[in-house]
Picture 1 (cartoon, rainbow, N blue to C red):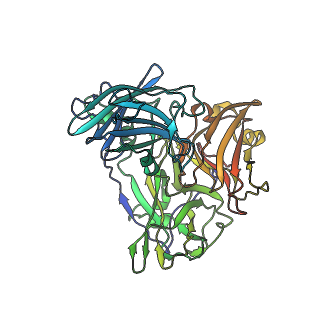
Picture 2 (cartoon, rainbow, N blue to C red):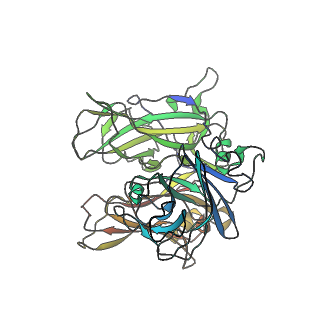
Picture 3 (cartoon, one colour):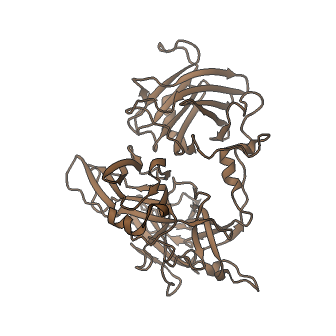
Length: 513
């Protein structure tokens, strides 16, 4: 683990394509929100555009959440829901205007659905918890107003809407009622019930909570791209590539200012997926996931090489990303440290998956890091709970593995008193294809409190950073963290499973993974 007393590291080597550019932000939400008098901002203060046609507005009051779904165009099927990843376990609300079905009492009707499989169409819930309040439809738009309780008390088929916690929204719509459309539905993380919402300006659309996050970006925010440099991916089903970086050598210095004399904070990052195939052109990258490791000493030389682990002096996980992760943003109180008395050297490790044995695929994937000299109050770091080596022997039955225990003795050494408790703000759960569920439990004074996070319906193709539940964000002296994974052993292959939670926290301390 990283810490304030540990020398940190980041970016680049000669064997990699890197550039830095000032960051500009396209505010892709406000142009779509609160159009005309159809949906009023005074009634629905929260808004997020889910795609170029589908705009979600909402309000929360007295234990309920009311959605105003505005879809550009005329449709007879509009759906919305909450998922932990894909269709498995999804809580879905389906509104339709086709009155040919016996269960429809009027032209527009909404039903609560549940999906218990990634490959089977959803079914109607035994307990109906979604209500239709209003419908408006013209030649140019369809607007639905739907309402449900934050807690429906349906623990089997509904997803709870937690306070100050991101949930993954899933949506679909069409001109013909067809539940199979959910199979290709997209998802997007949204914090439906933020606690720190306040209007920035009541006269314009920048009052959206999500646009406030963009407003925190400092004017000097700079993007630094770190990628492997035109690496020809192996035809093997699985392969790894490592690249060593001296980050500070790639951040420009002026005549009177050496970049190594300054500290920076990385406040956001995302993955870069870029690949070409000879004779074909641009193709999807074969990168399965990418890890950026912080190093405690300089690299002996810039190099790009095959690997299964990073160098021994690069054991600290700094950033992690998969094709389904999206942007990873840090809270306003913290940033990942780079530069003076911080990380200067990094190793990028990319895991490639090439089950079809494709040849002549040239990859340039990696990370985009956004950094600033305007430091935040705290350094952030990653606590890695778990293991990359899972062995389960029970055939053809679910198996549970407890991995990655942070015991009371460990937290007591790092958190000496309650006044300097650590704040844990994000989980990044890791399992592969045999995974069924994963949870990190939080034990305090011998009793279990709310977990850091849980995914009851694992989908290895959808991995993302999730919010730590509010009641468990403080790590206090004597606390224990226990990560437990359940697997479908019929799918388990030796050496191919992991059970890990990468927990982001601040202020950074010298934990050991």
